[in-house]
Structure formats: C-alpha cells, structure tokens
Length: 437
Image 1 (cartoon, rainbow, N blue to C red):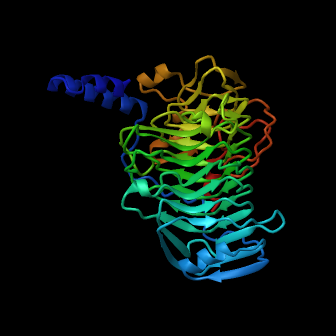
Image 2: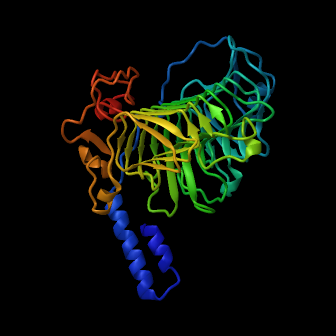
Image 3: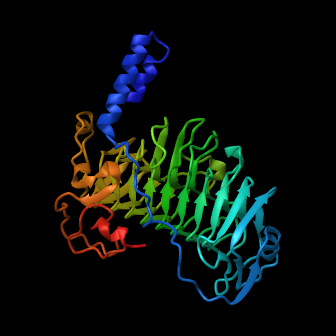
C-alpha cells in the first residue's frame, strides 16, 4: 500500500510527492521495523571449512585452469579431480561437463579442504553440466564480470545431467547461481546441499535473478543451504531465493536459511523467499509442454525465511504441496495463487498473513500467523516471540507456543529431534543452530 500511494504521488506537485513518500516510509516502518545496526555474520548455515571427505578411487591432481578443463574432458567414472590450493581464473566459454559417471562410480571435482581453492568466473556460465553422476564440493566460486548480465550461473545443469550433486560450496555474485532445466531430457534427482549462496551487491541486470532456478526437473533435494541477498536492481526488480517450476514434481526445499535482504537493505523491488511455481513458465519450457500445473507434490519444510519485501513462500499453480514447519519472519507471509494450487500447511510460524487468491485450496492443519490488519498498527505478535528480530537474535523471549501431537519425525532446522509436541516453525531452540559449526 505504501509503495502504491507513493507511486500515485510521483510526478505531482512537491507537497503531494512529500506526503506520498512519508506515508510509504511510515507503512514500511510499521511493517518491517528493522534495526539499522550491523547484523551478525551467519556461520552456522551453508558451507563449512572442514567437511568430511569420502575416499577417492582415482585422484587426479590439477593446478591450473587448463589442467582442470583437460581433466574434466578426459574424466572416467570414479575419478576424483582434486584442485591444488590457489586461485583459478576462467574467461571465454563455459566449462563443459559431458563425460558420464556411474551410480557406483560418480565423478567428483573438489578441493581437498574448503576455503583453499578459489575459482573466478568471468564467463556467462561456469560449469555447464550435461552428463550424469557428477559431484562438486568444497569449491569457492565467484563471478567477477564487470557487467552483471555476463555472469549468469556458477552451474548450469541440463538434459542428461541426472544425479548431480553440489555440496559444501560457496558461490558468490551470480544472477542465478544454480540454473537447472531441460535440454532434450530432464536432469532429475539432483542434490544441492549445505552451500553458501550469496551476492555482495545488488545485481545490476534486468535478467532473472533467482539463486536456485529449477525449471522442469523433478525429485531434486535443496537442503541446508544459506541463501542471502538476491536483489535484482533493474527491469521488474522481482527476485527469488529459489523456486521450482515448469511442471516438475517431487522437488523438496528442506532446512534452508533464506535471508532476502540481510546485508543489502532499503532497495526498491520485490524479494520472494522460496516458491513452488515462481512467476510461471512459458509452455515450451515446461516438462509436459503445457504446464497445467507448475509443480506437483512439492515440499517446503523446516526452512527459515526472513527479511523479504514480498512473500516468504509463494505457491503458484502448485498442486498437492506440503508446507510444513517453516519460520517466516519479516516477510509478506504465505500466498497461494490460482485454482490449480492445493496445499497442506502444517505447523508453520508466520510473521505475516496466510492468504489465498484465485480459488486455491488451503488445508490448515494448525499454523500461527498474523492478520494483516495488525501490521497497519505496527503489531507483530509472532515477531515478538523472539528476543530481537531486527538483530537476528531468534532466541525465544518466553516459552514458545507448542502444537498438539503432530507426528512430525524429521529433524528441525538445527538438526535437533522434534518432541511429540513441537513448537511451531523451523526450530525448537535457535541456540542449537548456533552451535552446529
């Protein structure tokens, strides 16, 4: 409402413009009320410095960009391509990954220890993966293009690249750090786990900005990642932390921490946390070439989503969805859109409203949320459960509200077991998250 009123006043006489700006500032403060101080560094989510290593079948050591490209081009099932510590700069074309691994012998590209190998990509796409059974781990990859439209993806996973795995990587400064889509076939059954996925500045581009952009593929698991500061500075200024769309099914976002505007603040535009359906898909790009539904049987579970100027969770033509035990803080809540959308909402803690538009079907199995009317009065009963949301102190101010016996057996965001009567939201005790790394 504030942005709408300010837009109406734009271009009019100075007193009207001033009133529009002040009303928008007031509504924003009532809604968001964030502290102006420096927020703590998030060290408990995403990549870690010393992950556990799997034994190598055949190790190929490389120490230059040319050696890495050569090793990938000649790779055989079971190879572990290990980069020596250092910085590797790539320019020109993508790094094509076309040699297939096997289920019993995947091909791995890795640093022996996270934080020792740095890849700089001055290219449109980094790794272009079109073959199955590849693993990428412990890499620090940064886009260094002076024109942000020239650094699209760290990984573009396409076609036959089934069973792709990216784990414990740090990916910085891309428009869509992971782009996953069909190319004659669909790259199903992938895993993106425990990565740190961030941008250090507003993306100066009108191209899509979505940290994990999954179109058409099915049965992916997006788990345990830190996704932060994905702000699109040009065009429609709408961006997403991650979505799955394009008529895929069985995709899961579990235990991720999504901080839409954490170090980058006060920028115009709309940031959405996670979505099943995104903004919709052109029929030609859909798995079924029709997109009767954008997603089927998708799951959003135990995610912490915070500091978003738009919806924390958005379901767009997402059929048979499960949205369970997520915590949404300082977002526009959860929105279900269009009659094709149906969802079970179970145990979510939502600092904002839960809304349905266009005849979507919502099955409310017990959630805590805030009526939008309270927001106009600056009241945030869910946010007030925490010690200091503005400074990302999510310890409980008082004993948290608990659900009746829910039957939820999966671990929470902080890898703690849930009791028989769990709290609403992603975690029982945020202190357990702080002690993870």
